[in-house]
Image (cartoon, rainbow, N blue to C red; front, side):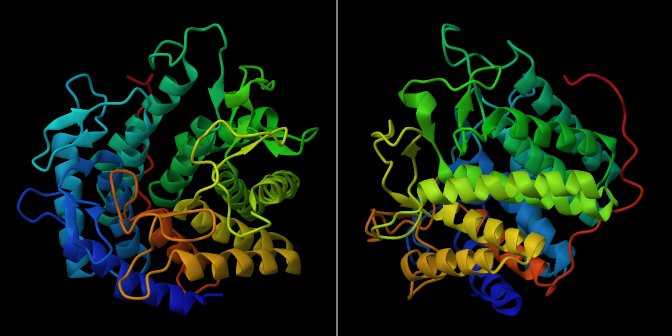
Length: 407
């Protein structure tokens, strides 16, 4: 297993230089993430998610490691590009831009806004920028309004079979935790509490010992192919968000609340690991069926990079919460498998996509969906959990919140 020192070394010496050297666009701003294994640019389009995820990462590294000049320069180029080009005239955000920032695609969901809120909050904390802090809160208020109010987001279906996804409360929880750890405030606390309650009550199904990816509005199973489809990596990512929330509750002397969330987080990890770990080849399958039948997704037996990053963090959080050696063993197993299969022996960063047997399916190090986020966040998390670097601290003076409904 990586020590915190080694994780930090890989982040500072390999991962960040790879993306800054090959991806940061000094002509137009932003970061280009469609890179081959050695950093060769294969497409200069820019995903909005990746602009704000990278901005969050750079600002977080400047806060918890040190404000290096090359990181600050990259942050300015990436965040300015995102702010200038990612917003549509209706206040919503695009998903896919060309190199100059012209919009190519806009999607119906509000995850671009989620990652922008994270980037704005982290940068606000780095620079003591109260205006940017309020913009982060405005985005989080809008996100929660859009996710919880029918009609704000165009429905995906006809209404014959309504459902709600785990992604809404799970990603909102992660965003709220970033805001709390950077700019603080009552909004972040309220959203975090609301989201862990919804995850536990509607998606963590004790009877089936499963974390459901989509449920009916009342939390019931939608007993059709898509409703039965589970995403182990997504559930495991949610598990460490919940376990982190338990740490926060314990730090606030809410022992009962912390114990309940630890149990929820452990269930999410244990059940999803049991269902998703490939007994034949190792590694986490992308999708499995609730009843053990054939999954709906054609890529179900591929191995993607990001679930393995999240599993490393979840198992390490579980070990920190319990001291149970089983979780130390789990963390070592997934980390060893990931580094043997995703790691590139010749160039920095991980490959993103493997076949079931662990063979590399594509040599791409990035695309519109894969960029500098899950793997470097994992390295930061390892270094934080073992005390190599301090956890991010809320910056005082940025928590004065304006009231009002989201817009």
